[in-house]
Length: 153
Image (cartoon, rainbow, N blue to C red):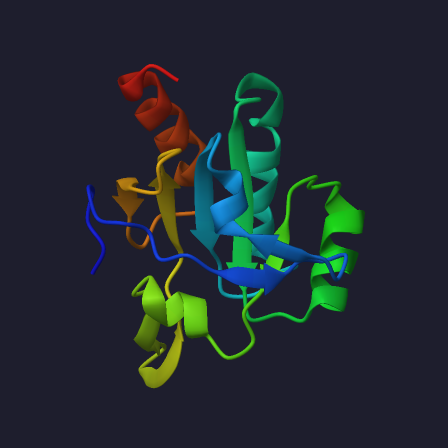
């Protein structure tokens, strides 16, 4: 599991507009990477719109979401809710596995493999500054603002 101080695993994925998005190209900013189970579901929409609403007050922070959804589904979700940040497609869960957010889950007594809703704050030099495992959709923007205030962003 990733911890503060660890080097954030780098990645390149396609966004909702079919453009390649690279973590290594974001070195001039802090980056928030949040993993969510499925685009356009109630909890994921609450989480993403909460982060969207922070964009005007954290202009120097890059927000990016990752799920297994294909780019066209991410595009429709972005259009519907005007999210305004990259939504990346990780269909084989390669990046989710690198970040330790893909694994066994339980829902209504049923066990399956899936993504655990999590968020990572990455420094401009590529180090993990803060990790939120199993973050709730509602708490996501609150937790992020608290962390940014603590580090003086």
